Image (spheres, rainbow, N blue to C red):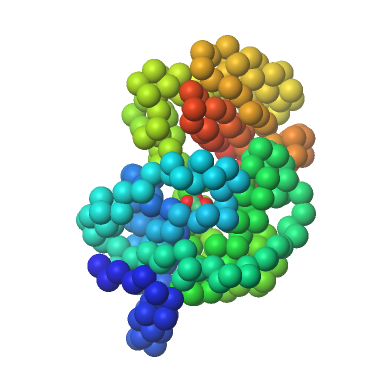
Length: 281
Ligand code: PAF
């Protein structure tokens, strides 16, 4: 695997790949890689000739400096995992390679930025758009792969890509789960043994909603799901929503895609999860 830390070097390399007729698949990450990320790499392998992964803990998407500081950084282990997964190129730039001194950049994508996660993490999605825009401009991928776990992030990035008419196809890949149902996340390393057990209420509740889903009964399901989560020790619910998969407003019987989304603090760790309930595509 080739490793680049500067924009210039990776751009030169990818120019040669493109000139050789290769298509580029891109998996942007913040590192602390797990099977969920590796599944994105293997999806990319099925679509593209050259696979690029980035590891960059993006400071502008953290609204809490403590959260940025404690974000797990495991670069040596990440490199090994990427090599085993057959990744061709790693881009691992320092902060000053991505951000100049005077980077004030905002994009208005409407409400999607402010609902659900947006309410609890003001500015987060502006930071995500900034960095993904910059990374896409450097890598110029044909396809880019993101996990369904950050469902709202996928919508936000889709809107940004539409806005700038960026020539990249976004691919949403299924959530990878531990055998007991917990959605894989880089943040899971922060869970204590007892947090780990309490955290299962999230996937258990989403599963219960999926099994009992009935388009005419969404308000009752949402309220029962909230009660199930709130009853769990050491779990503080931020939101549970049964939402229209395109607008993220509460779903109606006419919604094309319906998705149940949850965010909660388990002990000191904030987790998100979701399940797609219906889609007519
Ligand atoms: O999903 C993530 O890991 C990050 O939000 C992303 C897309 C790599 C941007 O920093």
